[in-house]
Length: 114
Length: 113
Image (cartoon, rainbow over all chains, first blue to last red; front, side, top):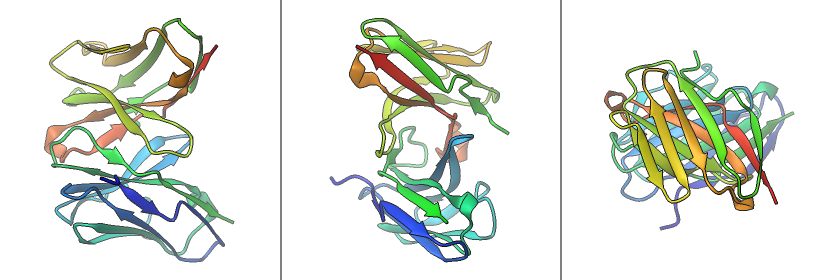
């Protein structure tokens, strides 16, 4: 299994532009999570899906952030418009079941907004 | 509201000695605690976990201790090796919240030869 696959690995964009981050979870995993890593807060949970349905988006910082999971093998996190303070590493993770304690992470997307 | 806290951003240890990484939490309803390890430019990987009904779990060189009354857990690495140098994240979970992990800020461990 290739693990959780995220793209792109690096993204540099100008303030005000739309940014889309992509994630392919591990096949057969029913739960998908989007995290953001910052120095101050470590790994923050932004949103998670169970069976493609958003369950908790309370961690999404602003309306500029949105996430979708159109099918079991693909999810996107979109920021529109992007701002410099959105610069961070964004991780996608998947888990076999909602009650599974262990989540498997992708390699992350390093986003820089200039 | 940081429910899981790692108050030491960094730790430096000599090879062969013990590394102790600490974590505090505020929510007594957490059911499970995990430690993740992260190398630069990689995603976090699961290391070891402990149920809230236990006070110790050991896996090779890694042992996690849980003190529920103090709402504190720690990860012991003995003996420490240079390859253990990484950022370690403590995480907690509640089963009725769908399995979402609440992470601390991380502690960067440096093991010097």
